[in-house]
Length: 119
Ligand SMILES: [Zn+2]
Image (cartoon, rainbow, N blue to C red):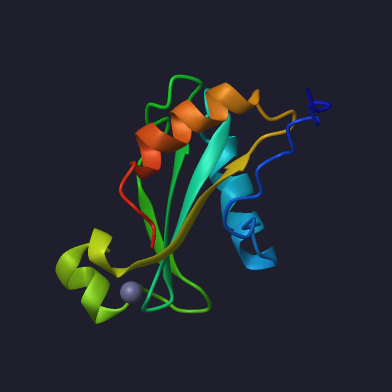
């Protein structure tokens, strides 16, 4: 019997982290969402961002916010389709430290971001 190796932390797809400009938005959203334990960050192919705080049950803890970096308003396409799912380029959850345990994160991610295949 072979020695069982410690299960390696599955990296999955490249870990996405918030960019500087996103961090400011995330901080603002969390400030207004005392129940939020994380913020779902959705990057759309047009460059706009969709964000919403989630609580420990994976339920929305804030309104969904769409914004565009360094722009007065979101783009025309987002105005038309409200940031449709088909145009999602990247999505992840920015967790408030300390982040919940792995199982909770998985549960919330599945609930918030869906379980549809990413590739
Ligand atoms: Zn847009």
